[in-house]
Amino acid sequence: MKKTDFTAVVPVAGAGTRLRPHTYTYPKVLLTVGDKPIIGHILDDLQKAGIRKVCLVIGYLGEKIREYVSSEYPRLSVTYVEQPEPKGLGHAIWLTRRAVTGPVLVMLGDTILDADISKFLGPGDDRIAVKEVADPRRFGVVETSRGYISAMAEKPEKPRTNLAIVGIYSFRNSQLLYNSLERLLASGRTTRGEVQFTDALSLLVADGHRIKPVPIDGWFDCGKPETLLETNRHMLDRKRPHSKASGSLIVPPVYISPSARVENSIIGPYVSVGAGARITSSIVTDSIVNENASISDMNLGGSLVGPSAVVTGRRDKLNVGENSEVRLDRNAGAE
Ligand code: UTP
Image (cartoon, rainbow, N blue to C red; front, side, top):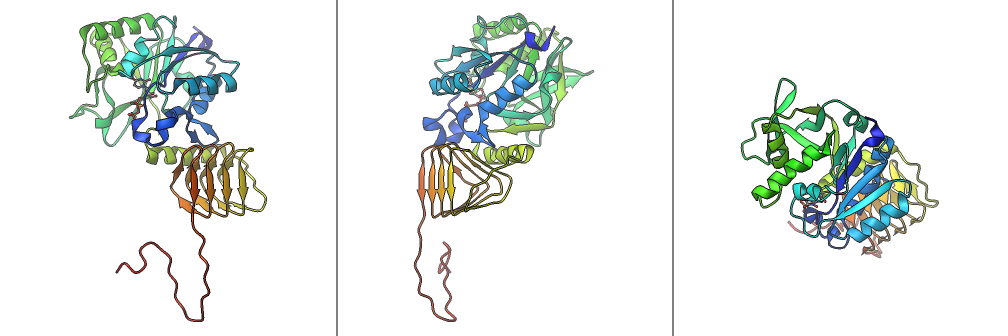
């Protein structure tokens, strides 16, 4: 079994509600982190690991994802499966059953890994990436025995371990996986209103199927504004892009798209500026400025500026005499 035999299934049909308002008009995976959209990092990592075949489950704003992937990744063989309603991760993966044969690698569309994906490919045991987390109640949680997974639960109220499932799974026999999903769907079982992938995997484990937990450290979530900014900082540190803008001060690491225009500004550290964006007379740190956004006369930090958003600050004109004190901060005069 070769790495190239694997098909990567990447479900990206969710509505990304935790990233509203950005996701009202943009699918989560097209939001920029570091030097490209989230899906770009995922597809780069898959290609680097030797994957050639990808099956994307699209739904909410799926056409935009299809346009980006077909124009940026012409050498990948990509098939698209529609999930008309986000009924859960298990449902999304079940829908790919007619598009995938042979070994399968499932990778979630809102996590970027700083791990060697090829560890999950090749012959041998089926594998799931896990990581110890402080509060496992938000995740799928696994219990282990003698080096294999012995039980799993999705977002349990009382987790029995702190080993969380972190978004990458590999199965040598995809048919076995699809059969288990089929059983779950036929049973009508949902957890928190969704058909959960973890529940289908639990059925496999209960049948005695051996799945190896593979611990990984570098796991970066893109699901919420705070984690998106954290992942942006990590990606900029990892790639250290060389960005320049004449007439402005750049404090690395910063990514500025070649088609963006930055004038008379101080940018960085940890700023990502998407294609076609424009920043004038501003100071921007620790922020993501998405494509075609426009920022002027602003002092921004820890901010997410959506595609084509326009943000304009104010410029004050003062005529200040000796020993005067002028405070323009928000809390001035509040006491
Ligand atoms: P999430 O639950 O984290 O993503 O699913 P979401 O639903 O888009 O975001 P929130 O919770 O509303 O903020 C993890 C991955 O699985 C996909 C999502 O697109 C994401 O890549 N997914 C989830 C589907 O494709 N279909 C589903 O029914 C559910």
